[in-house]
Image 1 (cartoon, rainbow, N blue to C red):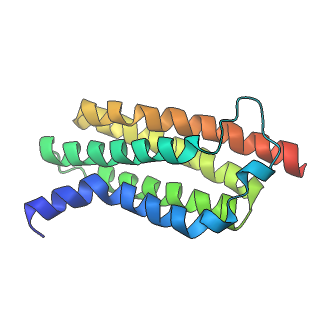
Image 2: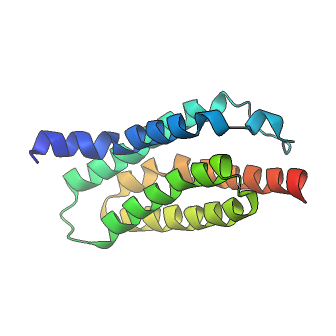
Image 3: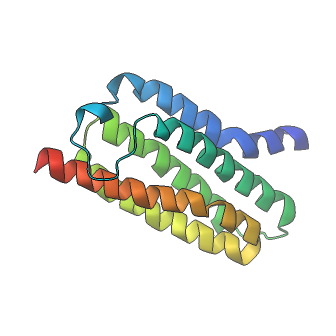
Amino acid sequence: MNKFLKNVFYLFLPLVLGGIVGFIISKSIDYNSLIQPPFAPPSLAFPIAWTIIYFLMGLSYFLYKKNSNSNDKQIPIVYYLQLFVNLAWSIIFFSLKWRLFSCFWIIFLVLLVSYLIYLFYKEYKVSAYLNIPYLLWIIFATYLNIGIYVLNYT
């Protein structure tokens, strides 16, 4: 793959995959029909937030690849693993409606993203900083996930 295509791949993979998953789950999204915990945002906030987050995620990995001379094999593994876990959460929560399992899944995602930020920080700090909004958002999403489970299924 030539350099230009690699750069486009790094930049836009999360955004493209997030869009595909969003399309796949769109008919099963029942967020508005669930009892919401306090501070739950309107459903319109989610596609806006995730578009920004997926772009920042891709940008962080692109900048890491462009500016780091590291041969660290761990960063790509953790990066792609957290992306998979992120995308799978939507399917688990919305399509499969496994609300309790999704609570544990998203906690795993928080841990993976925290670890990714740590790894990025050691190699290219800008990439770490670009993922802080992502971490904050999924911590908030963890609160929402647990709140929805408690209010609707216990």
